[in-house]
Length: 117
Image (cartoon, rainbow, N blue to C red; front, side, top):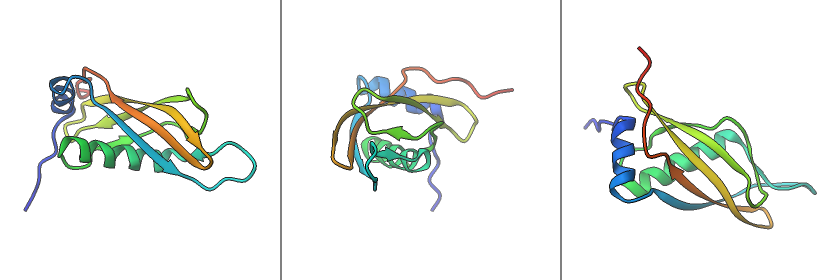
């Protein structure tokens, strides 16, 4: 059975229909004596899983440009890319840090960018 993925425009519509898609998440990472950090790949996987869980849709393709430092107020902007090439921004904001646990909110942008021609 094949499950079609929603284009980014559909993800945007879903986010707007629900008001604002805001999901609280957390991730644990191993650290030495420095601030905890979540790699860009681990962050993308976590964001994808949480968005799928929240929307009831298949896991979207997410890419994050940088590691997420476990410091309250730190933000990064990941990108959801749909099968048709359209994109939707996804903001990640660190809300708290408890030891090695980084807690963050995820918020999808309200509008998608069309696929490049």
